[in-house]
Length: 278
Image (cartoon, rainbow, N blue to C red):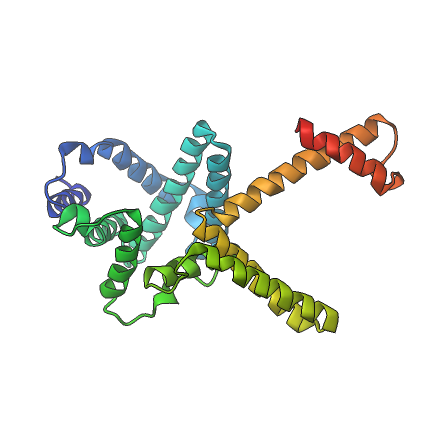
């Protein structure tokens, strides 16, 4: 048994003797590793890549996977998952070349983390629902790191602002910092709205920006409490607006008039039709 399969097998045993199906796909994965070895050795482009050069492409691949998930395009999801997996293997190969880590280490660390953070599966811990699982997860993450990190230190600084707001609020909730009743959040939303109106009247740009941020943060909080992913919700609205605006533009072109020559009233009339048809 090669080193990679041995480490994977050890992960299985540590997890409490998972069924043999856990090792399925190992031949396909070994083939992928072999292909990456060949590419890194023989392809000029692959050979030139570094952690820094690959990073922007990894971000792009992640967004392409996200788009496929939103579209529920399962063929595209399958393809994009392959692209993301390629990047995982690529980074591991470069890590191995530098003497830092290899794919075995990546898998072993992942197995260990999953087992440690799911004591309700691999140990005797009892949980009543998914919410308690998430709360335990955050507590275990802190314990896993020796308690040396703060609750919010695990939120990546480079996350998009909307996604970051969600993660911040999730982590705060996991340690009990949350509304007692979700309906209370609307008082905060209206409070932030009124503070924004006050600053708009005063005309201070910095304060206006601060209050817009506070209002957006409170809206994200409301979405979370009502189990709505605000990033997904906003993207749905983006797509809806694009469809309706494209309809508006097509209708005006059919009339032989560009949008800039139409009145707002005329555009609104077509927009109302768009809301019914697209």
